[in-house]
Image 1 (tube, rainbow, N blue to C red):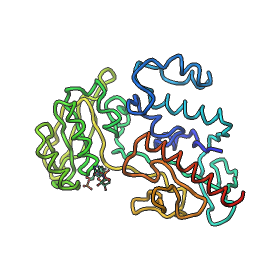
Image 2: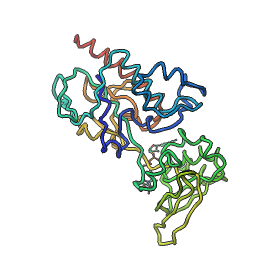
Image 3: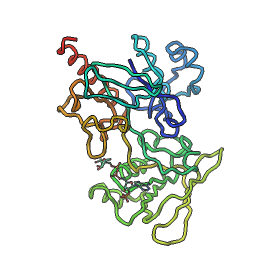
Length: 320
Ligand code: NAP
């Protein structure tokens, strides 16, 4: 049984609707098995018509995030998975079988549980940022950076940690200029990453700045950003075709109420090397909820497979 999350306004605002982070992205060019091409006929044949009708039109590219997720969902359904469109809001891992409470108030019992609730990218929380999501505002340079809309254009990256610098370095391959907007006068990133960015001819750091507003219009998407100063300087406007956030991720672990051991950054801790075990026997974790390092569709999918095998073998050993 899979709880895919509820379709609620709270989940929409939190970027935690069913089908997860991938469902919020456009093209996915790096998922093995889905090269650039026309998947239209395949999608029509594989996905139930009522759900297919709701999907955005397919353009010629590798699968889109929503397409990949609908295909995965359908594949699970084909194998007899029962999917419940509710959140799990509370767990009792101190008793056996485990007890889980769903957002509709129903409780469920399980002998083994795999937690794969993912993580969500942090955004600044500006209304103008929300308006241009997927139209120039992105929290994943590796996912979106190579899109034509960003080629040879000036781009903005927000943040001063390793993620932001890695994004800036990656985007500099395609962009005309990358402006790194950081709220302090010192980078948080490791020395090597900082040096690479500071010495890069296409990366320009705008120190002591925060984004006050994302500028743009309905035709072009993002056209620039308005920047405030954290040290009393006048506001400034920078022309840009995109704004990439590199200000960290938040794992979706609050509902666990610390019943599993978490890392200091609140990710679930894998307790056995090269396994998906957690601090509670019979509870396994997969994907970004336990991984703040790779964070790719393929690595998350692979760890899901590992968790399924770990859970199955654990159940077998329990004689259930
Ligand atoms: P991070 O180290 O927590 O850095 C987040 C950055 O975003 C900080 O510079 C922070 O500014 C800034 N920030 C946070 N909230 C902000 C806001 N509301 N407005 C403006 N700026 C904001 O996160 P991360 O870069 O994602 O890195 C996470 C971990 O992964 C780190 O341990 C990192 O070393 C690791 N990582 C490693 C690599 C690599 O080695 N290749 C790549 C990516 C990530 P302040 O500095 O002012 O707090």
